[in-house]
Length: 116
Image (tube, rainbow, N blue to C red):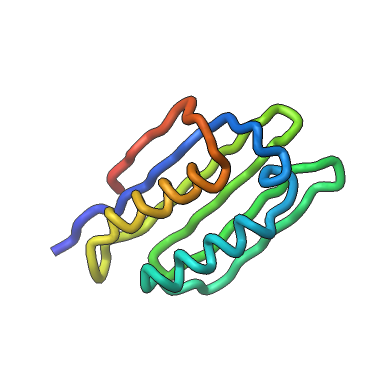
């Protein structure tokens, strides 16, 4: 029986300019989480912008995780979308969301939970 997946979307503020300026710590964290949570990565792209900030997208067989940062404004947006096709991944999506908030020591401005 089909169960909708969970899509978590977040806009945040953070003063962690080092974490917002370079994707390395975020990439390491996401790789650790993907492995420990038993998810299947099928591709990833990260890019550091010359003026600061980065963008990253990780494609998963379960769906995706994306993140965008603007250190000059202390802003982060990210989303975690995991389908529930073969197993219910809702708690995993919430754990990844929480770890990203923790990494950036972020204050949530707005967040949305969408069942799709």
